[in-house]
Length: 353
Image (cartoon, rainbow, N blue to C red; front, side):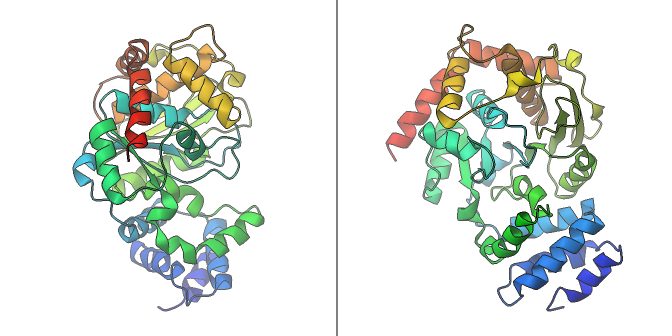
């Protein structure tokens, strides 16, 4: 099969692709010889049919293999990635990035993968740059960062050269407002392939299928989560506002359904507490949080929401057995000044490379 036409017709007829065919179509999308029009028709047909867990897993498997290997598999074995698909439009503070910082300060290797945000006033990459974390570094720096900080960031464009051939089709569909399988794949194609993951998705309908896909990729454990902070809204992470849905995979495959805040020892908050702002505003909120400044602008609901996600991260890697244990550990890391100490180490490390 040297084109996408046959598979596109199957999709238009409502047929799902078996793994082998899905993998081949993923490879073909990276070929310059396949026209953008053909790629657009295929991706639109796949989205309109509705992607299956098998198709998502097959695509993720291909793009994980095609990524540049940062050669940190020893860290990946016990490490985690914490991120969401984006696309929820809720405008929260950088919760998942802050969660990654606390996990790292708590001794968990965090192998974060991501890109610049198109819609957010302060995306993950923007916040990290403001803190001194360099996005484009030599491969050797990733190992050194993990050794010194338990943290590194893999800037997606530097690790997925094949995406250059897919970008025009993705941009054309995005201009139409059409989500595609690539809106899900970002957190699943970390080039370091960490064995644990806390991943948020933009729609409740994806919680179960993505957990299934993650299990098929062979990860050891983790959680797929989605929040509804107020009716008719969406959040690609956990929070103390509204309702949270979760599904585990690997070692946490028995976790499923609505996540009750009481099990984490936390109280419900107002959705407005979660809102972020510009890069400078979010850096100020982060520093208030790290300095444990209770009189500052960061709301208790946001603090607790960060702790909830950190607890889910600790649970995902098996460092704690319950969410309440995870919340206690997260609070201790912040209140004992370990997060602030870690942020200072970050500045020193990147100032010397």
